Image (cartoon, rainbow, N blue to C red; front, side, top):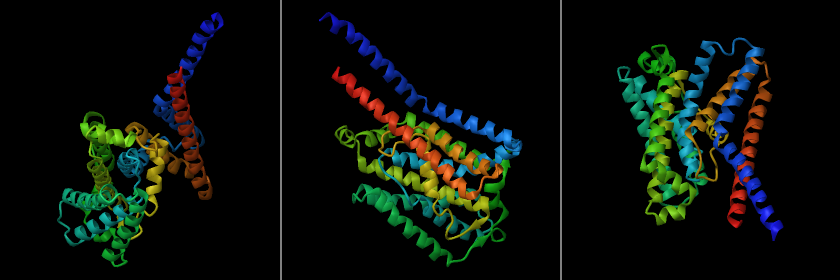
Length: 345
């Protein structure tokens, strides 16, 4: 009896210590990701002094802006245990339609062009949301079908033709290339999206309900939360951000094509995974998603500066993503195992 009494506190202390370490790993994952970004930046700077120049940093932030905007919407979808493979096609469709409108109406206010793109995206997202929430179609099936439909509509609307910079007014092109007080409009728009999303996720009832639906749909339903409304909302928000990104993309690259952003949805999902968003739903932080997108932006910029072969660049990025997934899985399993063990004790 005496041995049991002496041994029990020792076991409890070891368990508490192990749980504390794992909890800290989970809690400060974003800090570790930031540290990884800093280490990569230092290494690249030592190899190429042009990396951390103001001009290059501005280019990286600008190039990452669209990716990070889309990643914010994808995070909400993943939190609800869903996925959206149609965002690249939605982006292309909204960009093509808006490009045609501004080319035929050069005097159109750029804000109206942005609004039009978002409306197109919200309609596309709303359709997917209805398929998933009301008809019960699996998100991966619904969005895969929508991807082909929206991509086909883009080619149909354009007639297979491109719209180039000389067909677009300068006022529209300035959305992607202009700046205010030395800060690019794309960066300003991205920051605005971050701020609004942070408030929505952390300080609104609906934001908490999104996480509740992703964590435990049955409990959320018992609590009176409408899963149908939440799913319709998140896919509509994702569509709206994809529509916005379509306008920004076409303005930035001064070109609207039928295959614009083909496969880009995979980069967006990768940014979320790097940022610690769980594909199983229920967890994910805005700060992590932004850092994940920024890490991909750094890799896209740094690897060419290091003269890494394009064939290796994709492999390196994939390896980093795989490593992040493995770490997430191990930490999550360990935390769950120790929580279960603690309840038994």
